[in-house]
Length: 96
Image (tube, rainbow, N blue to C red; front, side):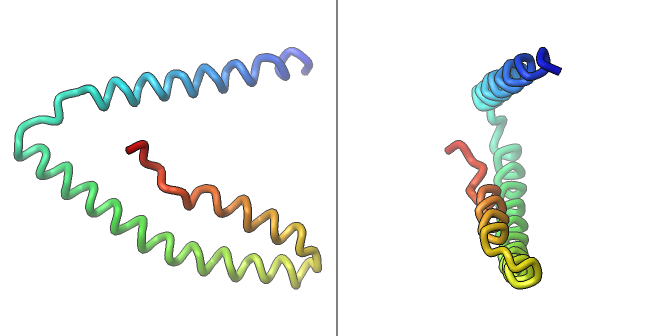
């Protein structure tokens, strides 16, 4: 048990370093010819539209659940923690 407390942070750090280097490798690759870029732009536009519509639904769901937790449990601190935790994934996931 004690050994895992020391190993887990290093494995997590190794995963982050791997993700950073993989991202840099992918970004440095040739984007392709005009047709490939056109397809990639269409995919990116569709993904952005999907995420925008999903976030609209998610915001309503989180707001309703915030009130249900606050009123149902009677603990607004727990409801606030839920709200704070659910807000982090709503940040843009782009590096540019």
